[in-house]
Amino acid sequence: MPARFELLLSGSVRPGVTSSVSLVTDGASVVVVDPGMVHAKAEILAQLSARGVAPEQVTDVVVTHLHLDHTMNVGMFPNATVHDFMASYKDDVWTDHDKDRFRVAPNVYGITTPGHTREDISIVVVTEEGMVVCTHAWWSRTGPRLDPYSFDQEVLKDSRARVLAIGPSLIVPGHGTPFAPEELDLA
Image (cartoon, rainbow, N blue to C red; front, side):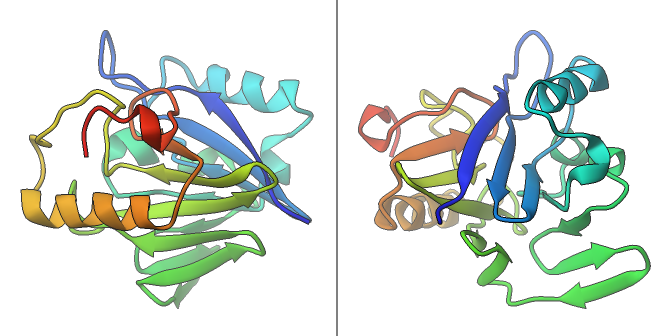
């Protein structure tokens, strides 16, 4: 049975900085991706509540990279295992995982996609409609073409190509509305 993907909040960089926050349900797994900066924490809680999910029911939280605008609200989920580019964390247990590809749930996995930071990962969700990729390889569908925080634009370009090569039907950028790859203004 494929996972179910839902966008909770679409990110932006103006007027305030907000991350795109996503919810994935996959069997017994309830996964939140990038619960970072938002106008108010209540926005995340309201979106979850509208879907019948309490913060205590979230089993996993994944952050695509360690910038505060994507990690700010990780602590809202007291029972969740937190995953980043190198490990999974639950209470006082730190478990290293494969840095290039690691499983979060049966139909949810992370892949290494550095560029915005050295620690970037993209989260791949296999749904009935196709693959959804939550990533900061793009800020939004339209830009910026050159990531002003990237440590290496060529590495970012390679990571963008890696995301596109897996054939996603939907890309959820770090700070914008989801888009289909064919809508992409920036490769």
